[in-house]
Length: 86
Image (cartoon, rainbow, N blue to C red):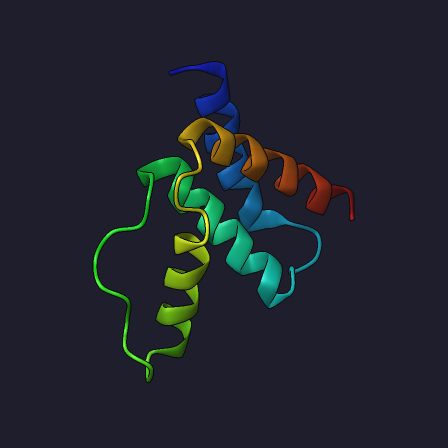
């Protein structure tokens, strides 16, 4: 496991214990960066209009299409660090 992968995994664990719950936009950004860092570009069909949360998550992740996994992991770690500082 590379140093970046280790930091990413550690940041994902710390995300569960942030001092303050982020707003929904930040939560979507965290979700999208995490998924892009773990899996790469979004796949599958976009959820239907009645699946509001699933659709928002899909759209957030799709917005990162083309972002390299390493870049997404780095951005995720940096965002978690900023959120920890408050």
